[in-house]
Structures are given as C-alpha cells and as structure tokens.
Length: 142
Image (cartoon, rainbow, N blue to C red; front, side, top):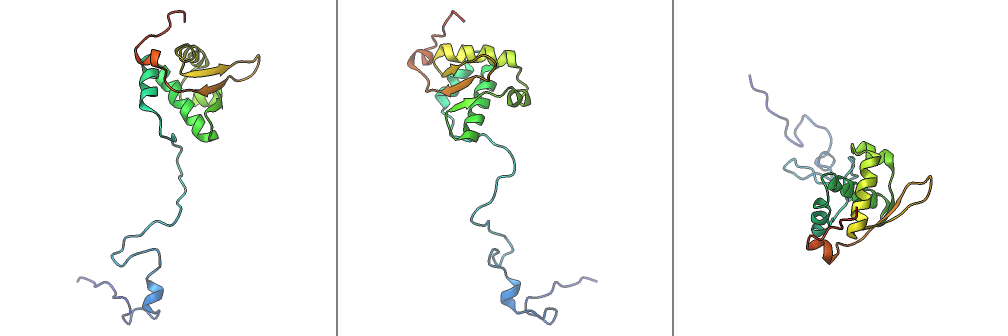
C-alpha cells in the first residue's frame, strides 16, 4: 500500500501554511543560499596571473608548487608580501631545501623579491612577470 505525502494545510498539520514555508526555501523544495555562506575548506585565493604561472612553471619542476603556495599565503594575509613558513611548505610536501632553491630561481628571474635575515623566515614580495622571463631568458648563474 502506497502512502500519500501530507498536503500543506491538510488536516495532518495544525500550523498555518505560512509557517510551513520558510523564507529561505522556494515552493519547489530547493533551498536558496543565505546572504553569506562561510567557506569551510581552505582554498587558493585568486586571480593568479596566468603569465606569472607560466613563467614560474618554466623555471624548474617544483617551482610551480612553491609559486602556488606563495599565492596561497598571499591570499591568507591579503598582501603580496608574505613570510614563507616552512611548516606551511611542508604541509604541501615541499622541503625547505626545495623552497630555498626555487626562491633563488624565482628571484633571479625577477618574479619575486626575497629579504633574508639570519634565523628568520624569508620575506617574499610577489612581483609581476618581467619581459625577459617571458622570452625564456633564465639566468644561468643560479
């Protein structure tokens, strides 16, 4: 025997129809989102310039990983200047030696500016992709 679903306002319900239909849902059953819905999972805040990514990807195999983590940190701090935390880099499976090597490569290519101090995390400023890097001229002294 098939049971029928109760109809709004039928004897099954003693509440008025207006209380059964919430202001956040429509009559077809789909719910609309509120004014603001909090993001629950971490994400990389964009936009990330594609020419910058292509310049970084052409430097070395892991430089793209380091570049994306730099933009992740920049999105967290709302600034293009970030402190490179080795804990965060380790969470992305990038060792501190790989970070150091690729920061040197990116700095030599003119994609970032790095301030280094003894015993402190490097402070990185993300810059725009330069014309020399777009042409494929990677410095040989690194």
